[in-house]
Image (cartoon, rainbow, N blue to C red; front, side):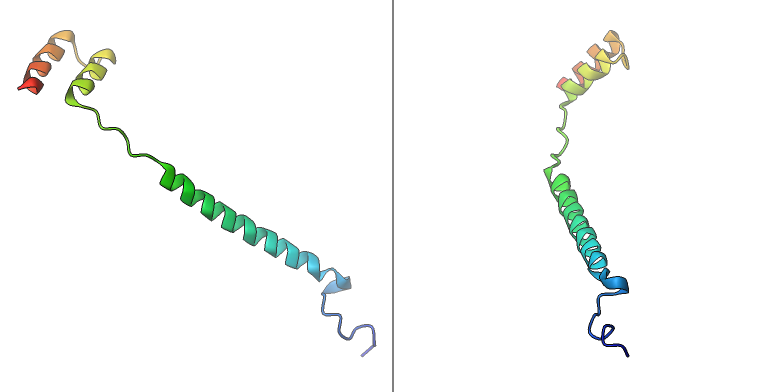
Length: 79
């Protein structure tokens, strides 16, 4: 073996360190992404539950029910 080839261990032409740095960067990006997903998931607040009256008002406003149906349903909900 030639003297220059012994002990290098850095891959082709001595640029093996670039591969190691790229692996480290990818690993750090994956860790960052996983941690970010965890924070986003825990930051979600549960959806506010609407009261029956609020649901009726929303359905009336969206045109799902008529005023007559609203009044009838409101009486039923109030019982």
